Image (tube, rainbow, N blue to C red; front, side, top):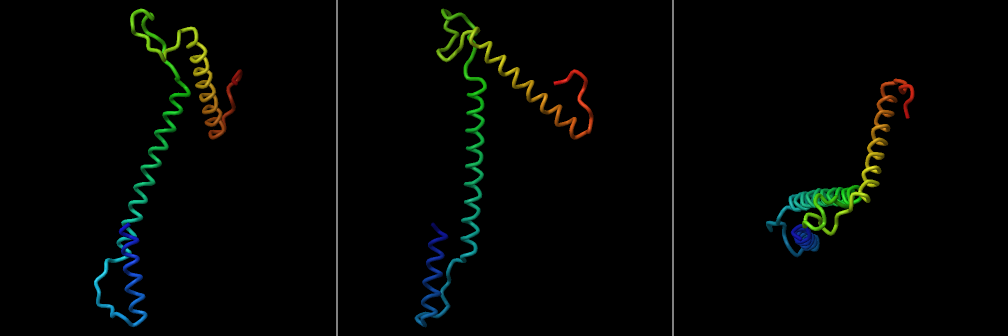
Length: 125
């Protein structure tokens, strides 16, 4: 808002000087300082938006890979919430997480082997 105000004042003053209505004695705010403040605020806003996007992304990933809790206590003792899974439904989730971890491990091993030029170990993936 300040940037637009200063730009408008400068434009009006330059226009009146060009038309011969005023001399250049008026003290105006510097446009370049206002522009720098504007860019600084834009940079801060961009960083805040990137941080919010990263937090949201991590939240989605967290909800996707660990959607529910295993109840620690039997249902009658009040330790289990409505969002928990029974142990039998939790097992496939754990198996999927283990398979995902193995895939990541194998991909990292393959990448390091390609970088170092080593051959994969016999009987590998």
